[in-house]
Image (cartoon, rainbow, N blue to C red):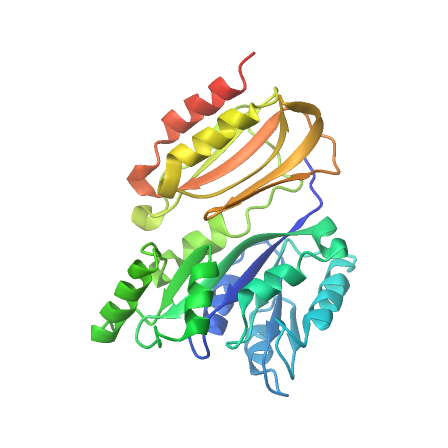
Length: 306
């Protein structure tokens, strides 16, 4: 049994009216036996988003009268500290930025030594309105370019504006995105995979492709350390077919240092782990038929061979 301390954080950005609150509400309501907390930031004095999300039954914390990317950074850190000091810690925390926020500044604030020691940014997801976005707006472009994942809202009634938005995303190198058809996948399998306290498979478990075949998860475990250089080469070779990866690992290059491995989009990190572990445990998420579970598993087995 493995127990890890860091609480996963999902930062949700997007322009005013893009549908961030609706997206978060859908994610909160799709949880089954999993406790999430949401921290939401309204720029005005009345936090409407917090009031909406409270109906989900999950704990919601509101921050008003400012933007967490600048004037409220201190409040964000204090709120996170309060949430993580609760007797019953959440399994994950969603942070909703205001529509005027630069998400890069939020990610920077989350490097606070206290926060980075007990929580880790799982991903930055930007919500995009398929019917209306000012694609020339510099802030919109920043929110898009900084994102690990994109979620297209208002796709139920596509029009010519939607085609324009999708084309603009492709021009920015962001051709892959999720929509309402993927909400169950996102809520149950991708954003908050609980690595804490669950029993581990003897080797690996790969489920059938999820609905719509958009996300295929793979769990893999070895009693031996894994070759870090080989893992880096494997991840690089999988390219865009690998959406997300995370794990608790020991590496042959430094076998005495347990580490937390995280990959979201193009962002990969390796940080020391406070808990002792043996061998390696990884969860990977690939895209549909592009992600060959058996092949990836065989390559991982080779990386942990004597």
